[in-house]
Image (cartoon, rainbow, N blue to C red; front, side):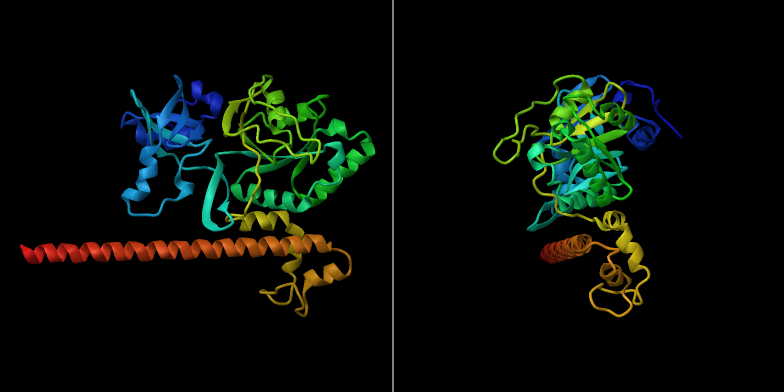
Amino acid sequence: MTHLPASRPLSAYGWDEAAADAFAPYESEGLIPARIARVDRGSCVALTDTGPVRATTARLAGADRAAGRTADLTRLPCTGDWAALEPGARPAVTALLPRRTAFLRSASSKRSEGQVIAANVDHAVIAVSLAATRAADIEPARLERMLSLAWSSGAQPLIVLTKADLVDDPVVLGHLVADTEEVAPGTGVLAVSAATGAGLQQLAAALATGTSVLLGASGAGKSTLANTLLGTAAQQVHAVRDADGKGRHTTVTRDLLPLPGGGVLIDTPGLRGVGLWEADDGLGQVFAEIEELAAHCRFHDCAHTAEPGCAVVAALENGELHPRRLDSYRRLRRENARMAARTDSRLQAERRREWKRRDAADREARARKGRQ
C-alpha cells in the first residue's frame, strides 16, 4: 500500500511508489524523504521536496562503531541513495532505504572492501572514447570488466562510443561498433558525438526513464556528454592531453542531475581502477557463450584446461571460441574468487573480534558482580 503520493517535487529525481512504500515506516517519526545527490566527508547534499540541503551523515558512519563492527563502506551513503532525513537547523541522515540496485567495485586491490559507486540506478552507461589516434584501442578486457560489474549491479548496461566524429570513415566506425557488440553480448552499443549531435537523440530516449550512471575512464568525454544531454554546462570540461589521449579528472564528485527529457543522470569521476566485487552473475552474463559451452563439459567442475570431454577446449580448438575471450574469462573468474575469499576471511576475523569483545565484557561483568 502506498503511503505517500508519487507526484511531488522529488518525482523529478526518481521518487515513485516503491520509494514511498520503503519510506513509510519513517513517516510517523517526523522524518522526511530525500535523495542523496553528492557525498562529501561526513556530510552530503540531500534533495528534498523543499530543495537541496546540506546534511550530516555522522550517525550512519557511527552505527558500525556503536555495534562493535568494523566499518563497512557499502553501508555508507552514496549518490542515488534514498534516505530518511531528520529536518532542522542541522539536518541529519538517520537511515538509508533499501537499495534496488547498486554499482559496486572493490575499494582497493589490497583490501577486502567494497565501494558503492552509485545506488538505485536503472542504466549503467559505459563511455568509451573513439578519439582518432586511439580508435583501435577500445580495450576489450576493460570493457568486459566494466560490463561484469554493471550486470552484477542489477542495472541494464549500455556502451556509448563517444567522439564518433573523430572517426572519419563510416566503414571503420561500423567495424568498431560491431567489434564492441561482439565483446558485449546482450548490451546495446551507440556511437555518439557531442560535436555533431550524432546518436544523441537515441541516447536521450534510452535514458528518459529511471536513473542512469555515467561511467568510464578520464578523457572518455563523460562531462561533455553530460552537458550535452542536460543542455547546460553543468559539468566542467578540460581538454584531453595530445601526448597520450588521457584526460584530467574533471568531475571530482558524483552528482545527481535531472535530464530535461526525463530521467536522472549520475555523473562520476573517471575510474582508474575497476576491481571486481561480487561479480559472479555479471561474469556469467558477459561470457554467456563460455558458460553455455561449460554446461556441456563431461565434468561439472571442469577447469577448461586439459580435462577429457571439455566442451570449452573443443570450441577453442575448432575456432568457435577466441583464445582472448577464454583468457579474459579465466583471469576475471580468478580475481573474483580471490576477492570473495578475502571477504570471507575478513568477516571471519570480524566475528572472532566480536566474540573476544563479548567474552571480555562477560568476564568484566562477572568480576564486578564478585566484588559486590
